[in-house]
Amino acid sequence: MSRASEFQDKYGVMGAGALSKSLIGQLPRKSRQIGPVAGVSYRVASRMANSLRAGHPARCVGELESTPVILFHAPADQVRALLELLARAPIQWSEKSLLFCDCVVPAPLSEVFRDRGASVASARQFGIAGTVMVEGAPAALACAHRLAAELRLRAVEIAPGESHRFAAALTLANAALTPLINRAAVLLRECGLRDKEAVRIATQLFGQTVQEFGHSGKLSWAWSVREPDAEEVKSELMAVSAPFRGLFRQLVLAGFDEFEKHPAVAQALRDGDGI
Image 1 (cartoon, rainbow, N blue to C red):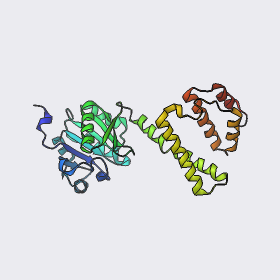
Image 2 (image 1 turned 180 degrees about the vertical axis):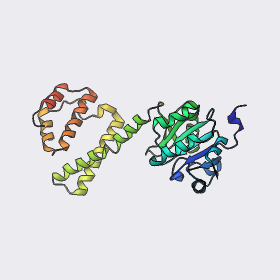
Image 3 (image 1 turned 60 degrees about the vertical axis):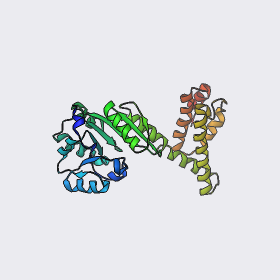
């Protein structure tokens, strides 16, 4: 008989912060099967169990030994302290799964548990409704998929160890893109448009680009077929004020490099004086 078959509760919880807003807190109450809920203290554990309306507060982290799967969630500034507390607990990690929910854990911290025999995975919401990213070792990854199924979420599985690359894609698609939308609106305002109109047109232009890419992929690039006039592009670059002009130039050149198109135009822009 495996150790897993001896467990009565499906999940144990180790956490801090707004657990109720994480994937853990979204589990259907009737099927949660949450046992011990542990934190930095019994008082904190009690508060978390109450917010989850499931499980019971653990007087010590070692009580998590009684569950086959430990769900972990904590704010970024508390991840290290809680994982160190979990690592010191008398838990036999062999045949146990540790699932990081809606939090980013540095590789060296998660490696501690892998070295002790745990199967480690992560499940994270990333801004697309009804979808969750999952990655990790087979046993814990299967737990992540079951968790997604219980939550009726579509699981997007990425290769193990690629969570930072996935996060980079998210940053590029949101935090890094927002300044570009804002700058397009600024340029439109500088043309004489009113603020609301400038924002509306900038938003529509970016939205149209996204839709066309979704339909045609890289063929939707404005210069995929038609070669742009190098002198016209230079004039556009000069119309943009510094220091944004340098970034604008890099972005334009990135298109030529990314899609391997129009090398002569790209070289003319690279050689351009004063741009």
